[in-house]
Amino acid sequence: MPKRSRPTHPSRPAPPRPGDLLLHDPILRTISRAAFALVMLFALLLLWRGHNAPGGGFIAGLMTVCALILHRIANNQSALRLNPAKLVPWGLALSLTTGLVPYLLGLPFLKSDYGYVTTALTGEFEWATALFFDLGVYLVVVGAGLSLAYALIDVQPNERVEGDG
Image (cartoon, rainbow, N blue to C red):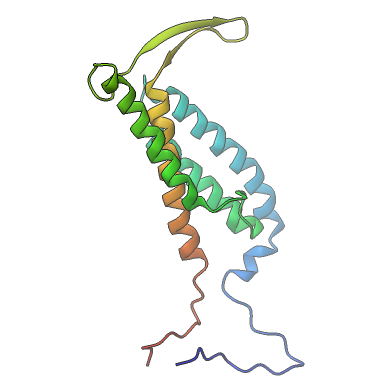
């Protein structure tokens, strides 16, 4: 059955969709810029500190998804220039590689190594290979979360599909 739509008179504009009113809201667009930057900074902090403190790739990925959804709602366009589903296999490959390398070297699967680096800018800080695993999880969560969210955002509530009465 073909998709049916309401006929509109040529001289009358089409009725607005529920999300159309938000597209031209200057307050939302202005506030979303600052909120996007703050949430992304917090997500990067969670990702960076995740192997030693609460946080990590999963929660940082969720925070990034929230920031990118806010950007999409406020600006009616994605901040990413690629299909987010393409991030999932890269994240899986990175996480699997992080676990496989120690295993191939005779260590337990996902064994993490760490060390310390001193720079003039940051002083001494610890690095760990667990960050690469967290980065893989981050990519999987961002890719899957945005794919699901964008699929739900693109749903038109007035569409009729086969099987509707």
